[in-house]
Length: 89
Image 1: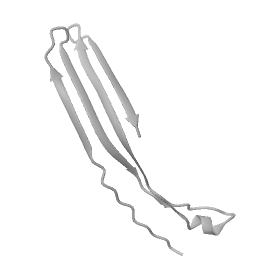
Image 2 (image 1 turned 60 degrees about the vertical axis):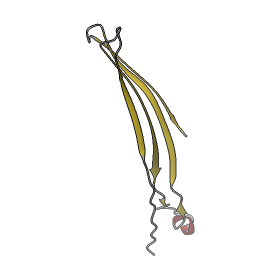
Image 3 (image 1 turned 45 degrees about the horizontal axis):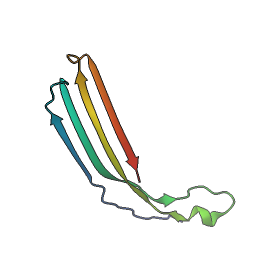
Image 4 (image 1 turned 90 degrees about the vertical axis):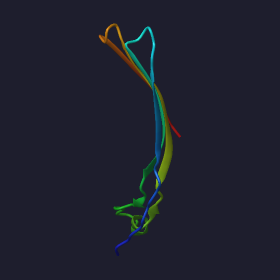
């Protein structure tokens, strides 16, 4: 028995960044993004004890991710500091 299923999802990403003019940093960048991720569903391929489980479809998964961060160059570009906060829901 050949089983088939189709899983599709819209997965947009929106990002913004701001280049700052500061007196204390050689360059400074702030950024943020929001994205939607998707992992396709499928079938449990092998189950030697119960063949009906092997034909069972499992559902796709999706989530939203959020990220904010900064990139700084300091001391005549001899020091680079990058930092980010990331959250998945």
